[in-house]
View 1 (cartoon, helix red, strand yellow):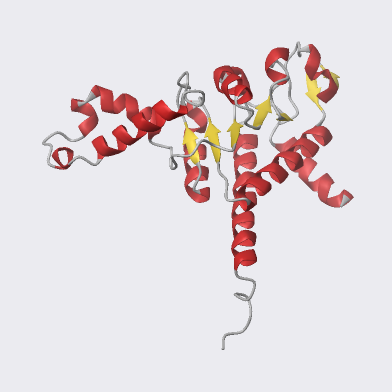
View 2 (view 1 turned 60 degrees about the vertical axis):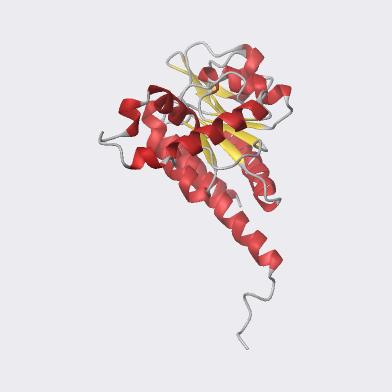
Length: 241
């Protein structure tokens, strides 16, 4: 177990996940290892513990046939998030959070249905333009909001890549008591950190770590889905008649 943890920490070190900011917020101090060249150094042992807790939550949700919503506003991570969402069949938002997306879910669900009906409209298929988005600005706006949503049910959990840029999503999830898994950097405001159920202390500017994190969540989901299927049909792994 010790060797396994050491290998994971070495992998985290290679992603620069330990690099914090010059002035970390007071509530983040508990996640620090110390300072080097006036820069905060994040304690990766605590990062690893938080990752395991987050994965345990994801596993529980998937085994209970629930789903989570990935929230990202960093253009650099868009492709990573899209690939992860497709592999796991989960919803994602890669653009600015819409106020009321969770707290006004009934209305948003109706808007989502309108978007789906509009995108499937037969007139669009016969349009002479190269893309329906060019002729329908409203459609383009809706696409940014709903292209990654694959369910009409409110999510059982939010997985947020950048907490500092998604404070509205955090506030809405907290209001509805929806668990939040989020990467938190050392400069996260105290008021936000207190609302995050499963914080993961890390350098959230590291694309290598974001890729590693998404890969970990993807594997957790796939394994959990397989375990659920096996529990529904325990004889499926046996010999054929």
